[in-house]
Length: 206
Image (cartoon, rainbow, N blue to C red; front, side, top):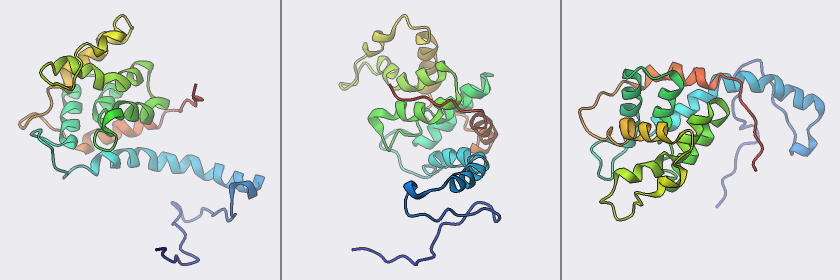
């Protein structure tokens, strides 16, 4: 069953002086149309990208848990708070905050989800650690029948192996309980904004 949408029900523009490009398909865009979008895209991302990334996490603030003492939102705050208290640099703290942002929506690939979210703005270590942290956890889950505690061994010898193992052991697998320090999300918002304000790298898929 389709719902009829009013002909002028356009989404609002972020700024009052901005213009719509009114074409039926991308194929119909003119060079002038692309110039309009190019002028508006940079300020739009600057205002919205970090906010919307944070909103992905904040949406789970009041969500239930399937058994952990704290839900994924609180776990993320605990992880980032622990890294901040240890004096880790800003990128590391942002990694800690967003490492499980896809934990519920894509549980079997949430590391890759977080890595792809931050990859254009962060170091090779941060991306590598995000991609693999869920597999490095398995060594701490030896009594879990679904975990392979040796899965991380395929990467032993890599330059980022030990630092990733430390992130998981020191900040990830232990921030799952009531009573751990939890700084409010507002503490981390400026850090997230500064990371997303970096000039992004554009990489073609292999």
